[in-house]
Length: 399
Image (cartoon, rainbow, N blue to C red; front, side, top):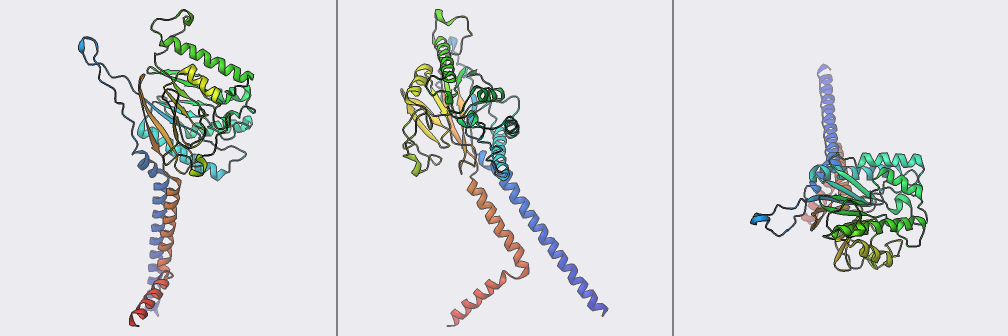
C-alpha cells in the first residue's frame, strides 16, 4: 500500500513539473512574440533606412583652397497621423494605432537623429469639431506619441481634419491650432528657407481668412524676392534679409493634378483609385491657386500630404512635388516617411518604410498556431490525426 501511494505521489509531482514547464514555455513564447512585434520589429525595419547623400560638385575657395562643404540639414517629413478623437475613436483602435506611431517615431528619432521634423497636416482626426476638452486630450496624447528632445524641432501645417474644410474653418479653430504649433509661416535654418502654407485657406473665394492668407503669402513672396537680389532694392526696407535660396514649400493639400495615374511605387494609390479624377479645392488645390503659389514663391521643392498615398509630380519648370503617404496603420498597410538631406542649393530625398501591419498580424497568427500545438501535444489530442494518417498510408502500401 505504501509503495503504491509513493508511486502515485511521484506521478502527480511529475505531472505538475510537466505542466509547470509547459506553462513556462507558453509564457516565454508569448513574451518573445510581444517583444518582437511591439518593439524589435521597428528597430529591425527602420535600421535599414539611411540619410540620402548629396552629390555636390567640388569647388575651390579663396586662394585655391578647397571650399568648405555646405552644412546639411537632416529633415524628416511625415503626414496624416490622424490621431483619433472622442467621437469616432474606439479605445482599442486608439491604443493600437497610437502605439504603432509612437514606437515608429521614437525609434526613428533614436536611430536616424533628424534635426527637424515636419508634419504635413491632418495631425488630428476630429480637430474640425472637437470640444475644448476633447482638443486638450488629443493634444496631450499627441505630445506623448511625438515627444522629442529639445535639440529636435517639430513644425506642423494645418490640415482639413485639424481646422475643417473651407466651409468649416474659422478663426477660433485656426488660433487653437497655432497655439499648439508654431504659427510662423517662413522658417529658415542653415541657410534653407521653408514656407509653411495653410492650404485649407487657399479657396480663392475672397473670404476674410482666405484674403489674409493670400496677403501673407504675397508678403513672404516679396521678402524672398528681396533676398534673391544682390543689391537690396528700395522697396525691401530694413527687414532682415533671408538666405538667397529658393524655398521649400510645405502644405497639406497637393498642388493641382488630374489624378494619381502617373504615380508609381508600392505605396502609391491602389489601381482602382489611380484614375479617379481629383476634385479641386477638396482633393487638391485649384489650378489658379497652384499657379499662384508657384509664381509667387518659386519653390525648388514642394511636399504635401492629404491623399495618404505616395506620388511624385513635376510642375512648371521642373519643380518636384512629393506627396507623403500617411504615417498611420489606420490609413495604410505600409506607412512611411520621407528623409531629406538639404543644403541651401541642393537636396536629396529617401523614403523610409515602417513595419507592415499584415506582417505583424501574420506573425501573431503563426505564433498563436504554435502555442496551440505546444498546448495540445502533451494531451495526445494532436497525435490522433497523425496516427490515423499513418495507418491509412500503411494500408495503402500493403494494397
